Image (cartoon, rainbow, N blue to C red; front, side):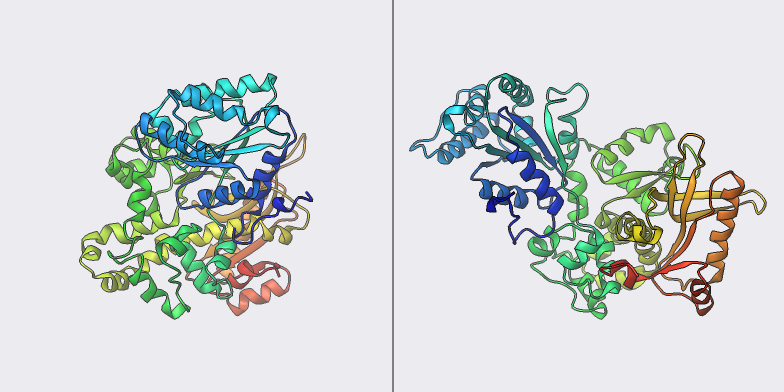
Length: 497
């Protein structure tokens, strides 16, 4: 658009696609009311983004607080009065009156431009006034027939509550024209945000601990960034592992903030099981001493909260693997929780010295695999030419050797009609091991087994993702075109090599 206000402010880092989606929603010329839902876990920068949008559009922003229905209504009336330059606060008798007045801001008599309204932390209001979604639904429906250029964005951090707003039987089901989830920065933007992308060895470790949550650098650590890879250990001990740091208890708070979580101990046990490498439902249940059916609810809640993800096995129908999506929680469960008492007493240096192997096996290693799959969803697609496919992981069963071959990074193109399923890539990712010919041979064996199962492997790329490097023999095979080698430098390069 030519309007200068459509340009994303320079102080908003990354978030280009989110900004484009929001501005397209606000600027749509429809003469009827439109509703959008913006969600995302806390610390993602939703408020920062929406405030910037509101300022660029001269809209109305209201940030709800944990309060009673009456106090929330008074706060809303006062904020709305300031927005319309009323000399006195509005005194609405009910939320019915407040929402009706709000929608009238987009009536024809008030101008032809869309009117942006942002209600942040909407779950606080819903808790105090459960009737609010129904009232918003009524007014939204009303102004499909009557003219109104209101553009209402409901935002919140309680993922289970926000997801429920548009669920099958919810009042707002089918009313929203925008459903935007503000997610953490990817590993590459995170490296830029922390100013460490030029040092991939540091960037990937930093991302393995803190992920892509923007608030951790500025609000939590006041820009305390490890200067070099050699500074990483000291930085970790003075920040995440220090009881004096706000990050020390952050992983616990992330879990406690979800409204649907009641028994925190059970949920921590589920997460600890996954952090220990128990990635299947049965493995999780055995770890915590419960039956598989008994953990269905906590697994579903953790998925709805975007703290746990279930990845389908690309080579075994009906099988799946769970992984923790928030790196800080994984780091807490694997490194901090087992030594919590020692850390609280200020022994971070000793705990970290004894936890480095655990960090490599349970945190950095699995996280590196995830980073490699993310790479294939983005710039790594250039390695496959114009082929597209589902990126994931899977297990190939070798009946002769009676073993399972774990494929960390796989790209599969489902067949259509009479066409066969095509395997575009098979990859193995290693964090602390120099990769050699045995790793390539394992991928070759997996390719042969899949070919015997009827899959098309004629153009399958074999890839070794190595954070610690590659042997000379493996490099020689790569030079002959037998494999693609991807190290940390390639993962963080601006253009794949």
